[in-house]
Length: 470
Image 1: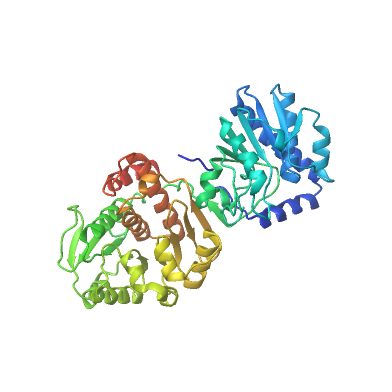
Image 2: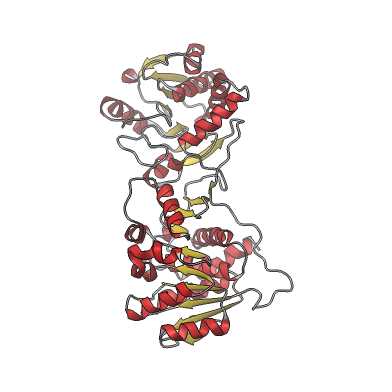
């Protein structure tokens, strides 16, 4: 499984340039910053090389300057290092770093493969696809290497959008300089980045965007009882299994009391779950008025019949935290943002890629930007699911979960996530923290379940995950 630092800031290329500019304004020179970057890269390569021969690819920009610094240090530390250069740095710190490298250098066209490949061709400043001769020369070098380490990001990747418009190097390890970039976490570029380590360059980095981190203690207060821990209501429909999954895991996520409402009053799979017959929207409204749930979940197994639309309407009108998932999102469709924006209580939407597109349309922007735009448009917290789940708050905060096991790609796992969010919301507190905690529990439960996971397995393993943050 890929490793990415938890709770780490994520910066766009422009935000990283601003952070560097602020450091320069405080008296840090470009050469000093390049020396720190090269040292960080050299340390990581030194860890992995184990005295194997190293080939360093150095481009003409600052990424190449970092590569020359790393090559010099590795050589001084006793490694067999060869540099394959693509052009020459013009002036400035990169040119100085090139001048300080006195070891063996060949052109990219002349390079032969070595056991360890260090990719320092192109960084965040890349403005055009990598293709043609460069791709044809680099790929054989990559294929022949036992280990590929990328400097800041794999060459050919768009730093902000996380896509490769042309050829891209696939790395085993990427040394992110100063902070994570969106490409380390999103889609195809996440796989190309491999394991990611962040090198502290000694410059201040601040961002409202972060990676998913383990939550703080989720234990209720010592004097808590079932009602203070919160009542969660899960409204089911024609596919009873999905709502049962959501209700069962909501109970394990911390809610003190869970009611599963279905058209026929069918019981959940746990005896502790209270069954309630809600055949029409008026029944739901009556229950809400009577019991005042702390959190409401509509969508898992709901169906798309007339009852579904009416139940959704009642949920949207209710003054309580609301999770909309699955069929509820499909029923709302392109009207989702308008309908949800009219609510004053917290709303969480949990679409997968297809549902998101139906609700908010297509865009060439990054998944982070698209999800953030949707959150701002709707006023809701958006949990845009996938191998790179992006959670966005209307106020601009973003959390990205990019290391969850691929075993979560199975029917019903999304229903479990909706239930976890509902259970955490029922306990009260900050909805954003509830969503983040639920996402972590979902990921950790999958890790504990291991291979062969089916969604039902996540229920018991969610309880085990809770024990780790109890």
